[in-house]
Length: 171
Image (cartoon, rainbow, N blue to C red; front, side, top):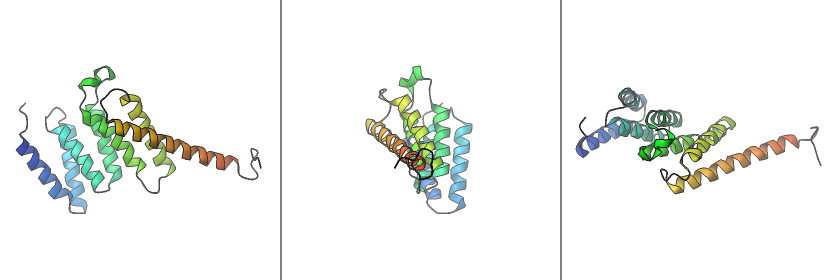
């Protein structure tokens, strides 16, 4: 397989942006077609780059569900076994982090979104903390966000159990 030239990659990016910038179903349709092609042809040199950028465009266009789904697809397609993590594409770690951020950035942050964000931050930290494959700043942010989510869950549980009339009520 031949490597794609920088010109071809730039051309594809321009086409992606030109199609994705107008609001409406056309941009989402085009992104879905690119993502479908990239997942159907994972061994292509262009596929990882294309799939990752489609996820970025979904996030840029504030389609958090589609972005999280595409980041997940990228992660599952291109992750390596843990003993081969040194050979893994660095975008794989970024995809897992961005997937968690898609859930964390939702406003208002619901219980289900918080649970999913916590789950994916935990996966990210368990796999990439200390390996050098992920940006240290993102590892720190993921740990902070995960701790914040746990604190919110703790406060909610504390409030629930402290309600008057509860068997656990302590004035």
